[in-house]
Structure formats: C-alpha cells, structure tokens
Image (cartoon, rainbow, N blue to C red; front, side, top):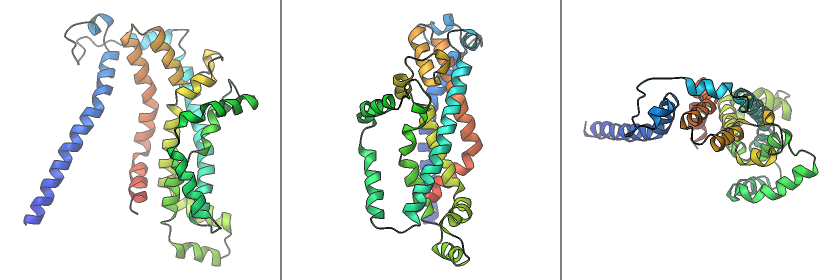
Length: 280
C-alpha cells in the first residue's frame, strides 16, 4: 500500500508540474489571440486586461483586405512549399534510414554517426556557401531554393532509423526467404510497420520548413510579394505596421492555424511514433 501511495503522489506531482508548464506555454498564444480581438484603443488602455471588453474582428478584416499584404497567398505558398519539401524529405530520409538499419555494408555505423555529428554544426555557418550554390544553380528567387537545401536534414533519418531497428529481424529474414528483394522488404514490410515514425518525421520536416524565416528572407528578397512565404510576409507586416499590435497579433494567429490543424489530425500517430522510438 505504501508503494502505491508513493506512486500516486508522484503522479500527482508530475501532473501539477506538467499543468504549470502547459499554462506557461499557452499564455503567449492566449495573449496574442486576445490582443487580436481588441480595438486599438483597448490595446492602449492601462492597465492592460487579458479578456477583451468588446470583441472585434476588425484586425482580421483589415489583414485580409490590405492589397499590400496578401496573407492568404503567403499561406498558400508556405503550405505548398512545405508539403513538397516534406514529401521529398520523407522519401530520401526513409531510404537512408532503411540502409542504415537493415542493409549491411562496410562502414555503416561510422557513416551514420558522422552524419549525426553534423547536427552540432550551427546552420548559420552554411548560409554563405549554400547561397553561393543556389546562385550558381540559378535558383535565386526560386521556390527550388526553399525546397531542396533542407532535404539533407538528419533528424528524421535518425528518428526513422531507430524505429526501423525495432522491426523484428525474423520478419525480414522470412520475407527474404519468400523471395522479396531489397525494395520489396522496404515497401511491403518496413513502411507499413513504420507509419507513426514516418508521420512524426514528416511533421517535424513540415513545421521546420513552414516556420523558416531567415533563409526565405535571403532568397526571396528580390521577388514579388505574391511569391513570399508566410513568415517572411508577416515580418514585413510587423516592420511596416509595428504600431498596430492588433494587426500584428492577428497575423501571428493566422500563421499558426495550419500547424495546429495538422497536429490535431495526426496527434495519435505523433504520440505513438515518439513513444515507440524512445523505447530503446
């Protein structure tokens, strides 16, 4: 009984700690949403209140009606670019993870850990050589420059490789004895058993590309506003209309809606993928 009471007490303490962290994490989002629903005069009131006295959607209306801020177009651009990037990334990373987990070749582990070691290199160091390569390829002001460079990321590779290692070796050997080749095992055994890990890797790739700000700002600086991504476009709103906090907050809230929708749709797969990958 004493052991059970200790376990229950620890669970309660863990729940309280997680609840506090959740509230602290949600506060900026709640504050931004409340500010976006206030008029400019109410935002300027002192002391500032969290709950709007008179809810208004004028900030959202103004955001979508401005000719110089095509938010819906930016949202569409970011979604398309992130989706294409994610699809290509999953193909490349899953093939690499399959090679590093199932196939046997000389130097496999050394090459894998060298790749993992590249995560310790700050991304900003690669900006100048990457920009030079993009210019040489003629991709400057092109969406290709926003899609291709991130395809070499190793986080998804690591995540899927750890998941693929949990696939029973007996199952793979049985498939080989039944006549399945390398690609047959990949498509008919590995992929069907690893949907959760692939979805988690895809979500991280999607969010990383969707939220990227610095690289699109460099690449798309000379292009038409209609070709900008959402983070870059929102930065111009914050710079041009930085006195209008309601407009800025409404733009920020609009930017997080697609990610929240994707998360709620895939949350069960995300939890399963992260938990099963972390078992080892």
